[in-house]
Length: 328
Image 1: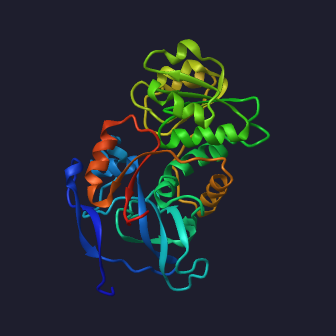
Image 2 (image 1 turned 120 degrees about the horizontal axis):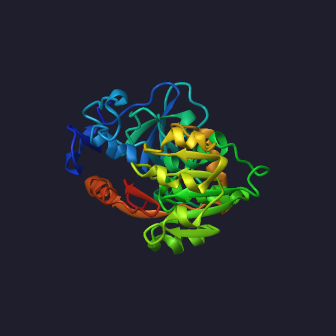
Image 3 (image 1 turned 90 degrees about the vertical axis):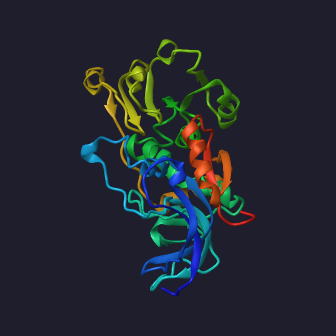
């Protein structure tokens, strides 16, 4: 260590947002194959508040321990400040963004500096601010990997197919809407009514307000359902899927899997992972104007607890982001 210090948000105990403490900690140094990133903005994601609560929402038999103290955060946008041994892919001063070391909890993004494997990073789109860029990695990669890898959609297969996105206005949802529409699929967005205008602008062909309408009463024959909500009522959307269709749960839920399989529905899901090449593909879509980033709210790093309180209230439109550097 050089003895240099920085400010970061750490949790020393599990609990509510109040366990997030803004404090001074040693600045890390990049190892071989890593760079040091001066963080300008950090995205806030569900695993951040799940970890804060000890992953109590996950069955005990698969629950992972939370190492304490922990600097949360996996999504960052910033500038390369130093190179680890052997790194030639990046140069000091490059603007980068990425999902760091996921699915581990070693991203350490809620900080002024963090280290990042070079393979997790892509060049930040030049026309996109750091705050918007920090909202892309986990949610954008989840949508990308679900649609392109799990479901197997591409520009040849998507036209003529219908994709329903439940929770369409949220982080993963608003990216899934745009990616599916960009491939030529017909897209149905399900969210509360206050998000309708937002989703219409993103290109949904049909909007369903779940607060006033039972989705299963008005939608049938969907080829692919991407459910970003999950929970105990996830099975209520089974009737909208055609026999032979797919269901992609982003979060844990009760889907009555035996009944789903009897109806010919297959499950296409999995854990999102860090991938710098795919981040580059998302960056290209953003630069071409085919992918937009929705930002729900922005908090300074020292108010990370307030950002988590916002997340706890739900009904998020786009992403919650922490501003780490002035002017980001």
